[in-house]
Image (tube, rainbow, N blue to C red):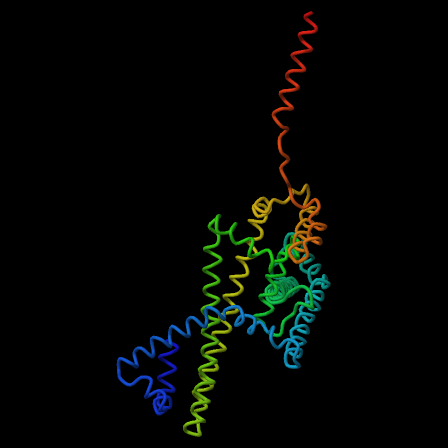
Length: 339
């Protein structure tokens, strides 16, 4: 679809080039060109999935001055959410007034007609609704640590669910997730994760292709005709923004499934990795932190030092000859007693 729309918008310019005329030559050649170009774009999107995702997260420009400015704006929004939630939590007078004028506690014969009760109750409902909305925004769109805040909203959504295993269980999601995949595949839960991941990749690819289409149309129009239709460019850019917002919503669903994967499969993963069974939740968190640091080490000596007491090994059974000697000894003792 992208290739067809791109050729529709820019075909009048591309068709004028001698390279295109020589390459296509005929109607069948044009069909082969479109087919080959479609395969090339699809293959490029498949191998560039990780860099494209990192680009939209803001990794490539986080240290630049636009990236630092965008990151600062997100940090200020996060700080405002914390401040507003604290103000709502500290405001207890409204709750007291609502309880004071509650019909079950009021001495009035017609408490429902008391305007103070309704005013306090409506204010309490508004504050609780705002608190729920702000808390959901903070948990979904921002990581806990300010050092993990990214320049883009998509980057913050990804950082939020990548931080969840570390914050909850001490598990480094980036290094442990590839080792979690076989366990998730065996349980069948990988189908749900893959479904959400496909939706996220689909909208992210559409956003990237639509943005590239705007650049392509603007560049070819200015090069061949020295003018361009600004309305078409703005419409294409708006479409890229819409697909980006849909990719954020898909990333939220994908992140939820990733969180659930760690909740449900971490004990099975521990057995598959051969780790010692912890006796408490505190020991489990310390164990996953230790294993995460073990994976981050490159030197074998450092790994040996960290792995002490981390893995469970089965001790071999005593040799058969030891059992035989014990049997003979017992038999000899019984014979001497008989004598």
